[in-house]
Image 1 (cartoon, helix red, strand yellow):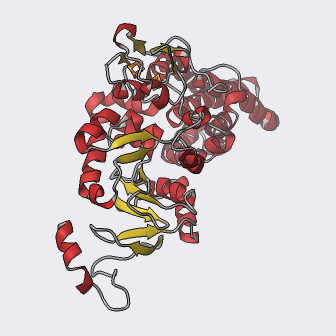
Image 2 (cartoon, rainbow over the protein chains, first blue to last red):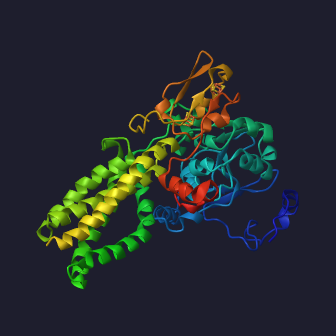
Image 3 (cartoon, rainbow over the protein chains, first blue to last red):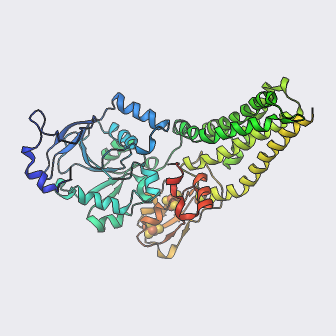
Amino acid sequence: MQPKPAEEIACCEPSYGPQSSPYERSGYRLCLFVEDFVQTPVRPVPKVKTDLSSIDIFGTIKTRLNISRMNYKVAPGLYCVGNPNPKSPVLVTANYKLTFDVLRKQLSGLDVWILVLDTQGINVWCSAGKRIFSTEEVVRSVRHSCLDQVVAHRKLILPQLSATGVSAQQVKKGCGFEVVWGPVRANDIKPFLDNGMKAEPEMRQVTFSFRERVVLIPVELTQILKPLLWLIVIAFLLSGIGWDVFSIKAAWLRGLMLIAAAVTGIISGAVLAPAFLPWIPTRTFALKGGITGLITGAGIVWLLWEKLDGWGALGLIFCTLAISSYMAMNFTGSTPFTSMSGVEKEMRKAIPLQMIAGLMAVVVWVGSAFAR
Amino acid sequence: MKDFRYLSGVSTLKLDDASCVGCGMCEIVCPHRVMTVENHKAKVVDHDGCMECGACATNCPSNAIAVTPGVGCAAAIISTWLKGKEASSCSGVKCC
Ligand code: SF4
Ligand code: SF4
């Protein structure tokens, strides 16, 4: 169905939909998180629930596991919570469903408007970094939702982390609304509003707690699944090389050991390093991963000691080390405190070393087959 | 963040004292409390805490702040190295 201009919808509202619910429309399905509609001079605005249903929670788990994560969104536009009036505050947010859920969960008992921007299903921080959560998008959404007819005041509360993409000054120029920078985290919104829209210094600072780090790990792991398949094939091929040119038996037995070392490296760099991030010495991520890789590599060698000789053990440690360091370096993108200049500096030093370690792993491992 | 320190002396952040009008915007938007405003002048108090997000520069009304904004993401940087600035962005890399 073609979208209709606001006026037209507003004027023929009563004749819309079947009698059981005036909000049902052909071709649309009512979102489960919408509990009712609130009348405004422009159009009825969906009122959303502040508790999450099992479907929302299932959706959150799915995205955290990287299953259709890139297409988990809510339709952009104006929503509300409670019974807002023209004086109620307007919270602006991204249309990533996870972000939307986190926000509405914190709004129980409040009467507020929520303006959801079209950030292409990306969270606030990342979409602002890409300039999708931008000045233009804020201005466009304010205009498109006819917000000036819904509320009497001229203030928008934006999440602080969107400041990367949004210029408060330009928003004011573009649509007449003043930007008030809200807290970084949604769970500080209530105190922020109670405090007369003032944020305490702690509310202005990003954190990266153990929990915040751990929830990111599954996505890191799913991204390595495809390369891991290649790694497995290569591991079997390399492990079969020996005095008999190629031995299937060696490929299988020694291959399994090499794969164990590689998987250990992945876990070390993508699980242990992120989880224990602040407690591992050194600031460089590649080094952090190197440290965990050395420890876990030594662990795997200890477990397989009966079946290894000195060279073989060394090869496995190199393998775990290289992979762990690389995986940990890739975690930089998931943290909220690494600068591009810093990551680039780190990579210029780390990548050659990781390549050497990887090459050493191959040379020593294949060589160890001839040392028998 | 005090628990998390990244490399020192790398940030491209620069503050031009002369053009600062002391509005305090940079102090509000910075997620790492890099700036404070005292006596109507902004001051960089934690240069190494800067992650080059660019929020301060985007919101400074007098263009007193210069910083090369970027994402500190190894995967994105690798794809920039391989494919060039245009093709990279994060859409190719599924980071965030
Ligand atoms: S935002 Fe710009 S003008 Fe305002 S205090 Fe900071 S540096 Fe000065
Ligand atoms: S670039 Fe970002 S982290 Fe650095 S000073 Fe500006 S707002 Fe703070």
